[in-house]
Amino acid sequence: MSRPWRIEFKGALYHVLSRGNEQKDIFWDDGDRNCFIRLIGEMSDRFDVDIFAYVLMDNHYHILLRTNNPNLSKAMQWIGVTYTRRFNNRHARSGHLFQGRFKSLIVENDAYLVRLSCYIHRNPLRAGIVKRLIDHKWSSYPAYTYNRKYPEWLKTDTILSQFGTDNPQLSYRKKVQRYSKEEASLFEELRYGLFFGTVEFADKLKSGFLKEIHPELPQQIMLKKHEPEKLLQGLSDVLECDLESFRKSLRIPEKDKATRDLMIYFLWQTGLFTNRKISELFGLSYSSISRRVGIFRKKLRADKSFKKKYDKVSALIKI
Image 1 (cartoon, rainbow, N blue to C red):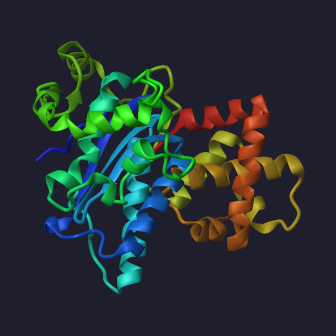
Image 2 (cartoon, rainbow, N blue to C red):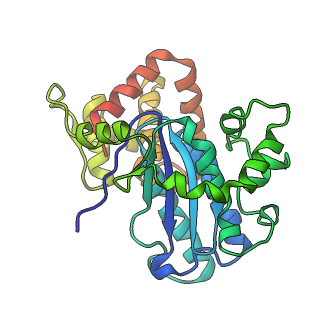
């Protein structure tokens, strides 16, 4: 059986869903739920993903999000692997936690966000877990309706601004309360089981979206297997640097240090390697990786030439 399509591009909107293996619970207690919500925030920061809505059920979760880079698979793989590892460690278990790959439905534009967020937020009500949605605290619903304190990474303005009233929270709450009558019409706009939007939008993506090496970029390095040494070698080839000098030298010139930090950040941002693994690859201390990543991110925002260099690396190395 072939894998479902993964259409990824800058600015893409998605409704993401993932279930527990064999329909089993993926959240056993509040500690698990708090852990996962923290990871949503870290994913948002690490992969530059905008989070609009989420809900945690016992055996699955929903997230409504936008990727500001074509990296949905990387982001969702990271959160799935990281949460599974922490869950298994916490509960002294091993093995798979999720049922295969996550499911993603691509959304045409912001106009669908209100309706999809209503559908997501109403999950606990449909499942009979609560009689009032406000009683289910493991979702973004309280942030939209009662001005409850919520994390900075949750982007409520994009949806609330569509109401155009003096009290958008109240308007949203009323919308959610009466939304059960509209749910069926929402799924009438699901095309090919993959797209929320018009037929034209779905057909355009279905027929025209191909992920392949561009013929004018034969130097692209396609890495099918996430082997750290091969990835590092690819980075050093693109950046034309001596990888061994980074590993062996105690004192590195500032220019070379910037290149090394770029490589560290690139590995970190893929979400495929732990900080400990990255520290081992570069001969650095575990605690220094977060510090190097922070320094690099500041440089990335402040220095346009450095941003250009990083974008070049990202374009030439595809994971």
